[in-house]
Structure formats: structure tokens, C-alpha cells
Length: 191
Image (cartoon, rainbow, N blue to C red):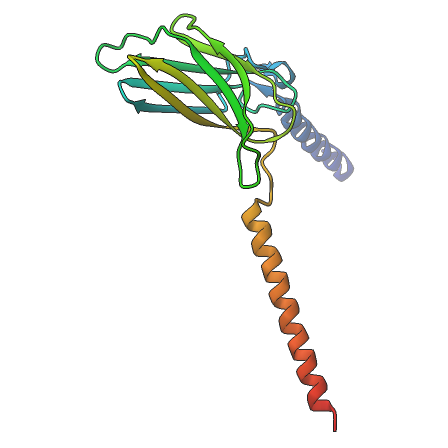
């Protein structure tokens, strides 16, 4: 017969093994350590957009799934003609600019690429965390095309600009109400 003390030790051991087994698996994705995932990994993209523009069907993907500041990433753009499915063989230019209300309109050239197996691939490395807009520009049949795609680098802000504005307004409204009540109470208290 197992003593009460032994039963408690077995329960603590099982609980400990269960907790540590879950923590050991947390840093692996698809059987690979998370620290080895990068721009060339076979994980799903961080963002994927499909659209039709003019005579083209466009697919855009950004790698890795969670891009971080100062780390290499890759953008893939696949453009195919709608009428026959033939891939676009011309050059595409890639630029980046900050996105958001107070962002600069300054654009930085990432590069210009010809297709490799029908896919235009462009590497990137951005210094700061934040929201960015990727601009892809090309010309086909005498028509210019300019595509804009979102890219989030690092963790998104927990308080977006609208939330901060609403919070400041709420604090000012509460402060104004409290001041009015205090003044009214002083006026009633005076003889």
C-alpha cells in the first residue's frame, strides 16, 4: 500500500513532468527550432494577398511569418496574365515607406528584380518595428502598375493612435467634470 507521503510525491512529479513537457515543445514550429526560422524557411508567410489588377492576377507574400527589426526578410510577388496564365516576365521595382497617421512619406528603394521561376523575389531588412507599406511598381503593355501591400515588422503597438486620443479625451473630460463639481461645492459652502 502506498503511503500518503508517497502519493503526494508521485502527484508532484507527474505535475512537474507535464508542465516541463509543454514548455519544451513551445519553441519548435513544424519540428524545427524557432531560432532557425528565417527568410528562407518553409513556414507560412506573415502576410499573403491575392488580387486582380488590370490584366493580371497578383499574389504577394512576405517572409518570415513574424519579421523582426534588423533581420532579413523576403517579399515574393507573382503576376500572371488573366487571359492565358502566362507569368509576367518584366522587371518589378520594390520600395518601402512607413505607414500610419504620423508617418513620413519618404520612400526607400529596396531594389528591382526580374522573375526567377515566374516569381519576383526581393530581400529586405528594416531598422525599426512598425507598420510599413511595400510599393511594387512595373509596366506592362504601356500601362504603369503601382501596387501597395501592408507589412508589420515587430510587435504591433498595443495602443494605436486612436486609442491614445480617446484615452486623453476621457481623462480631460473626467478632470473637467471634477473641477466643476469642486467649484460648485465651494460656492455652496460659502455663506
